[in-house]
Image 1 (spheres, rainbow, N blue to C red):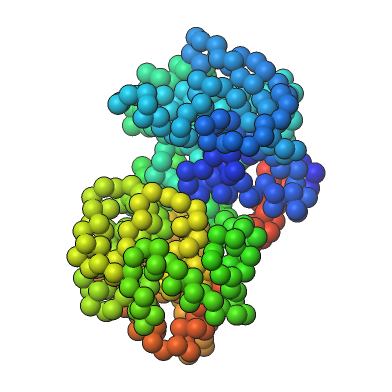
Image 2 (cartoon, helix red, strand yellow):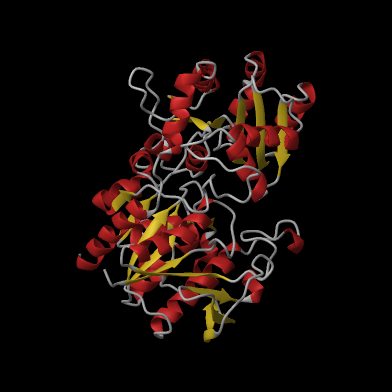
Length: 474
């Protein structure tokens, strides 16, 4: 396939990162090029976040937001990436917020519009040439409407997490520059009296994808549709789930320079040394007989870590050790902080996010916990499996698609799935993993199965290439 596809996203590794979307946008285009798609990336330039080299200017123009012009420059960043330079919008210490601008300050819509209007003008003027614009999450939800309004390229819109919808007051619609007669109403941007960028992407894109088949099936139901289940059901076959991949070169315990010792599925013996290093780093007792349960996560209601917090006394009675690396909800973090004080040497808490610590937790954990209440795809369970941490997860979204349950009789499967995102159900799943822990032959088989799982991007990229062909031929 020779079509040119531009991926447009507010975040992209290595230029910026908040969550898994940045990893996807950083890896998927490269995988697409491997299957013959001319895939490129347009993303903001955050000079406070990205310290790498920036190349030549490929275009400069004004974008109009409301009645005000804002000067934009497009800068090369390698052969397949263009950065949108607009200091007012993007010279920030973070991608989505800026605490230095004062409490209550929020110009999120302005920043999203700068990126999308920069793309629109670049396509209008031929500065960037595209057959398809692939838009990622609500921050680019208006772009399918722009290119449709211009008679421009086809568009694909990917939902990474339906919970973050980009909802703004209806009084801000005029900033988009679009006709309210055509684009504001129940069948367009309007969302319970406000405007929703996510809804715009759903209704105006030629194809809508999300990041796992199970999540695509879940979000058309009212309990998971976040108020957009009707719009999603209306898409019919234009809603497709494609499971994410991971960068298997970066996430490889045999070559990972962030691990103190290398190991792989054929010889996992030095994983025990990584576990010992994790215990030392987190102040846990050096007790090889205790299974070490790890978590690397945003600490939010979605991720269900409060469920783990509520069963910590039980896990302590079972002789487990627990480590959490994450940041977010203060009440949940306080729960783990209190547990670390109550059970010193048994519970460890690392707040914030540090890439080297994340790799250490994945590499050192015996069991990896993901009690998500919903999970569009999830990348952490894939990283954990690569690093020999047996996943215990809820049967939600991408977790259901990527973690086949272990079967003792056949020796097949890679983890344990809880049927429900409740403390009782998740405790039962963790208990089963802990029951398998002393049965070394079975536990080792499950661990080896997990480490051999193939999460390379090639299969997903091939599926996207098929979908692009369908969009272009429709």
